[in-house]
Structure formats: structure tokens, C-alpha cells
Length: 169
Image (cartoon, rainbow, N blue to C red; front, side):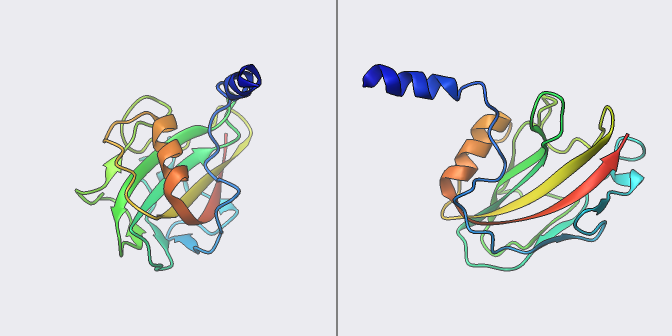
């Protein structure tokens, strides 16, 4: 029985974490001032131009903290994390050019801390901007690995919402 449990745990080790846990209610409404859900992300917000990060806003909801995960599920090697911000203060309902001092940015899948703009190698990719309401701050340090940050977010998530933008090569 113990062996079966260990084998089950090891089987999931290679799988990248998903940014959207299925057991979290989807009550938050997420928007950007840059594109609508399912629309193309303008070039100024991609690697084709300046690479600005869009301002993301969400419906106010009671929470002890918030987190944002921006990922590309269409990346050749699975989820590519473009931006992960944890421990946004309670009452926050917008994130843009500046990140509150009390929040922490994890490493993205490119290995740097903070935002890396969308830059698909080929085809059309979907970029999910998922906001999570948290039951408590994650306590994840700035510069944490994407996997550690996403796992900590999932462990505290009570509600989520998402907007998806598209970028084509």
C-alpha cells in the first residue's frame, strides 16, 4: 500500500502544475484594459514590441490576499509561466505597472523574476491571466520557483477568475 502511494506521487512529479485548480470556485471576474477575453493581445504587450505588462483588474471580494498567475498552456513543453505574483494585499483589485511592496514575484519559466512578455514560437497561443482569492498569504519568498509558487497558491485558493488573450507567431 505504501509502495502504491509512493508510485502514485512519483508518477505526478514530471507533470507541470496547472494554473487553474479544478476545485476552486470561479466567481472572480477578471479584466484588462488591453484586450477582452479571447481577443488578441496587442503587439506592445508581447515580445514583438515593448513587452509591457497589461493592467489586470478583478471584482472586489473578501480575501486575506490575492495572487496572479499568467501562463501559456500551449507552450511546447507544457505550461510556461510568464508572471506569478503572490501575497497581494487584501482589498487589492488591480495590478499593473507596479507591484505592491508586500507582494512577491516568483521566477517565470524563463528563469527571471517578474513578467516576461508572450512570445510564441509558432501558431496561436492562449495566455491565461488567472487571479486567485486566498484564505491567507502564501508566505512564498520573492524569486521562488514557479512550481513552488503555484503549489502554494493552490493550497490557499478559495476563488478564482480568468481572462485569456491570444498571440500568434
